[in-house]
Image (cartoon, rainbow, N blue to C red; front, top):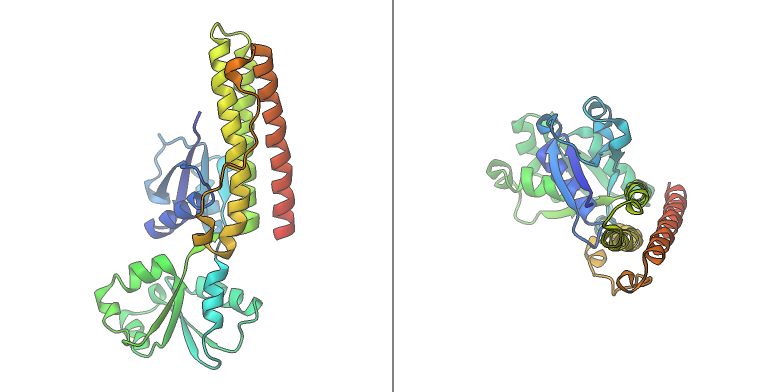
Length: 292
């Protein structure tokens, strides 16, 4: 009953970044693969497709909109603290493949009070190689999303060789914005509740009801644990993904042990876990609303 997710981006770098951001929300390993829009196939049938806002319209032509969640990615607080330490009046080059996101990074910084430095966009895909090389020779401070700096700047020998030795690179590890992560978790909790409800209705009429009830109880308990722990991790992520990577210490409550109870008690335990999942969904809606 493990759900399958697809992280979809405009290119491989973005698809992998979305996949990383989704995985960073969860303590448990989840089944997620990265795809570009071009390599999605008709045979593929994920339970949920996760994309950036810019890809929503195109993805809706390939997949039912009910199975899509948009994930807004933004740098963690650690990135902004580093940018905030740049001396007043310095010129800071903003590295990205397109102009639009360099402007978004500048807007994020200014909204947090970082206004005493000069932001110079460096949208390398929108400029000629010659212009990019000329700008890189003058760089003292350069900021941008980590995968673009590592991949398309440092991974490009021609660009990397142009950087001055004393250049300061500040890489942003993007994570899911809190309201966006809450929406994703709300949707996943709903899928889990639906799975449990369908299987719960089937159990009483099966010859193997006892065994299936044990399996479903375990699945429901793990679903509650996954969502509960991930709510906390999504909030911690916004501060620092490194801090959020610390594993929880088994904080999830323990319900009745299904192995030593009768079928009706097992079913009652499953119903109780369904109620807890519903309560967590309500909490996620409140987090989403307050974080917007």
